[in-house]
Length: 100
Image (tube, rainbow, N blue to C red; front, side, top):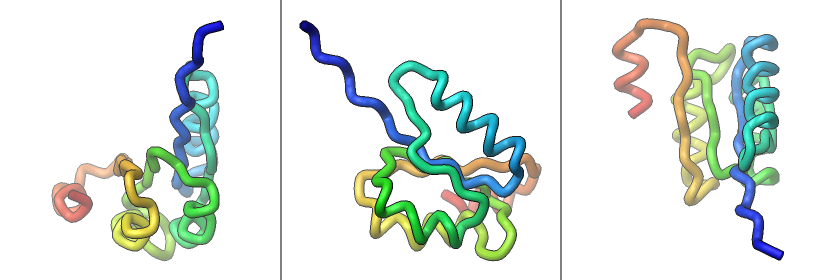
């Protein structure tokens, strides 16, 4: 029997229900990936991320309440080894550069 590769656990933080659901379905339908957590706000994500130990977090930049940029700043020390990908539909260079 051959070993199966480990699944990449991805957390999605997106306030738009349709977009969040689409990401969850896409991840769960992609071989080798699974959605470990889906949250509608940065605050919810910060409460739950450490318990789910994702390998990758897809984070919307502009969320209601706390921004995705601030959420990543707070989550990064807790989630060592986790990669963060920032998502946005806005053409705002300042937000993109702040997220780097």
